[in-house]
Image (cartoon, rainbow, N blue to C red):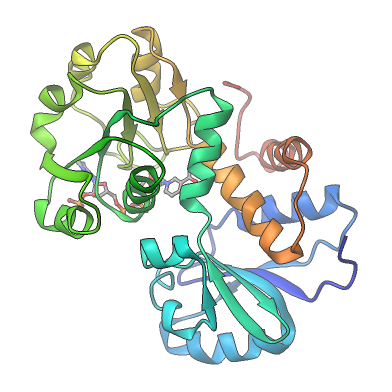
Length: 286
Ligand code: NAP
């Protein structure tokens, strides 16, 4: 295990509310490494200067809004997923070179696997067409999903997704009930029902159209069990919260920084402990 870590951190604008230091330092502590992961406020104007400084001073860093796309041309090398999503969320510094990758989609697939949810050959409906929906839809399309329908308010936004994969099509947000009637996996990628967000689904009767064997995911992790998931669970569906994706994308990022595989169970427990101790999670759902 690497014992000569240089700086680690997450960059964004704004950055005050990021959970990444809590999550990454929890894992570093469990590995008996220095807890030196910090939140760094970097404005778009300073991004290029920061990446040049990072070559010498950093082991790696994560990126959040608004830098994920802007980092692409600043990297020396990119992973296939970063190219596919046209977004970088993790940069590891290797001998002064910047390797940009993106762990969001793979983190989501690991969360599905953990809950025993198979998607290969399946028909998937995604609600929302933002950044998270993009990584999830493209990763599922590239990993064996048969067909993906993105239900969203702005079809213009969905066009960027439909043009990126022939397996993805778009439909209106009002047509959810119709779209999910032939669906194996339903995923909420909107902020509807998230703590601190006023907007919520107007009602959940559309879930009555979902085939009984379909699984239901929410990318939201605060609360762990959204009303969307509760309603799906009440109807007998296997459910999956956004906590797994949050944790696994972070573990995959730390593996990139340390350039070594990590014990997933040990790291998941370390992250959960940090999130509970930090008051971010309440014990409600496994
Ligand atoms: P985003 O880029 O802002 O996209 C949000 C999407 O939701 C957009 O398509 C937006 O539609 C749609 N939307 C917002 N309000 C809506 C409403 N009232 N009715 C219908 N659609 C609505 O956000 P994001 O980064 O993709 O994140 C989406 C959610 O995923 C957030 O809750 C975030 O916390 C969660 N997330 C979780 C993880 C994880 O690790 N678990 C990772 C990333 C994101 P318009 O384009 O029409 O506004």
